[in-house]
Every structure is written in C-alpha cells, then in structure tokens.
Length: 281
Image (tube, rainbow, N blue to C red; front, side):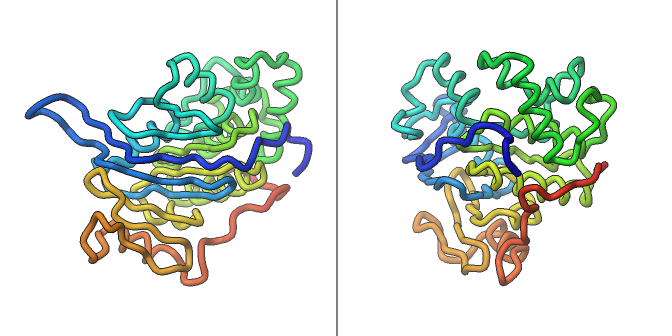
C-alpha cells in the first residue's frame, strides 16, 4: 500500500532499563514492576504476556510515557521519557506513538474518518489533509465507504479497524496495543489481529502488544512473559524459550502457554500490505 502518509522515522529502538513501579507506601506498597529491562527494535512485533497482576500493562504505560516509573529509564530517540515534563510526554505520545485499546475509545459524536484523523488534526494538520490520510488508511483496512459512519453504526471489529487507522495516521515509530481483541469474539479478534499486524508492518513501525492470551501472542515475532513484576521468559517465534536469569529454570505457565500457541515454523503470516479486508463483526 502506498501514499498512506509520511514514512515513520526508523532506526531508533525503544529501550527500558531497570524499571520499577511501586504503588502505595510502607506495608501497603505494591511492586508492579521489580526491575524490568527490555529493548524493542525498529519494525519488530513484541507480545508482552502474563496473567492479571503480572505487571504487563504497567510496563506498557511506562514504555509509552503514560506514567513515570518509580526508578529506571525509558530511552526513545535520544530522550529519557522519565525525565520529560508532562507536556513533552503528551506531545511525544501524539507524534511518535500510536495506541489501540481494548474498547477502541472512539469519540461517539465523530464519524470514522474524523476519529481516525484526530491525531493529525490535534498536531495542527489542516482538516482536509488529515481526513485524506485517514480515508486512505480506512480504505487500506477494508472500511472504504464507511468514512461517515459513527462508532454506534459500526461493528466491534470495524470500530477496532478505525482505532488501528487512528494509531497509524501520524506515522508513529511504535504502536502500543493493550488487549486489542479483549472485547471481541474469537473469530473477529483473529481477523483484527491479522489486520493490526499487517498494517503496522506496512507502516514500518514497531508493535508492542499486551495480552494474557497466548493466541494473541502468536501473531508477534517475539514474546516476553512476565510474572510478579519481572520478565520470566522470552522467545522468538519458532525458537526455544529462554528463561530470565532472575527466575527459576522451569518455564512458568505463561511461557508454557505462549510456547504451545506458537507453531513450530513461527508466527502465522500477517495480512500483507494492500490486501483487501472485508467487514467484520
């Protein structure tokens, strides 16, 4: 697919070093992260997998600059996100990062094309230009002809495609997806994941997906498993799992589930650039 928008700036990894996050104090303190280091290379897709309470969503929020860790650093394009002002982190999230959430979080009063164009318009792009870019992404994602539909007139799968378009219109370096199929049925979720991974690959961005579902993780080239605020395992599609030295040698349940979900020859093929996708519910 061509002419979707300006190419993202590539070549910069997203690097987290020694992240900790503590909520509360003294005897009520909860250690959501207990010293996590992770590098996301340009263009790769990484699933962060673990049960509820393992720290995976907190890690995503720190990587994306949504929250500041208690200690540690997050480096992106020469800047440490943990030292930036809230205003600068907000600008960075709008310009460099894209987001897809479980519920889509579309504005109900706006049509699909304006929902998708919103990051560009907030960044100062003229409305006509922004909606043209958004319309091209919607067409790429199988929503041609639905540009003027509001979220209430879309199925769950269609709404998530609008959210994917919104995440990509600004040509981000990294797209973050937090349980992107959690509100969808299994068949629709699988199709949305194929669309998401294919579209991000076409854009040249890296993808970080947080999930508790091994079936979601299998769409990514690398899976990182978490337990008790630490990385408990890591492996690439089609390769044996590697345990974190911080953990015991035996793979935990999340790592075993992710290993079982990955076929021996690697993750399934993502949707290819330019491939047409039908409407999904």
